[in-house]
Length: 104
Image (cartoon, rainbow, N blue to C red; front, side, top):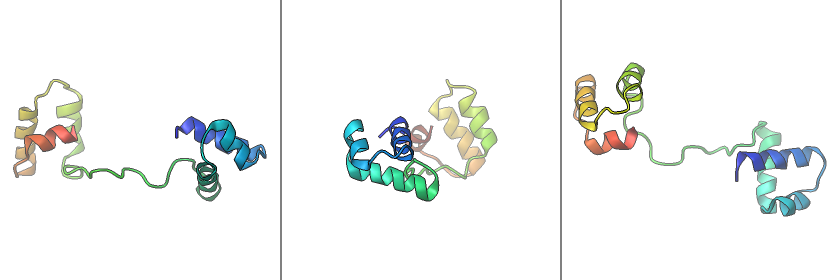
């Protein structure tokens, strides 16, 4: 469900539209509408509580923000091999090519 739809659900709820009618108009389940409305009333947010439920990054917290900004983001054509050399120097431990490519 998009953020726009979540906003429409909250606006419809604030306008007094019943949950079943809101669900029918937007083409979503009543349970989904109820979850969005409950999240909005309890937390004041429409986004889901659980976020980033995928693979955890291996290098986060180990790399200095300066390195990330300088080496990768400013120069988009930096090769994985160059990044690996720089990371190995900074972290003083080996880093695989696969990890570098996955992270950046």
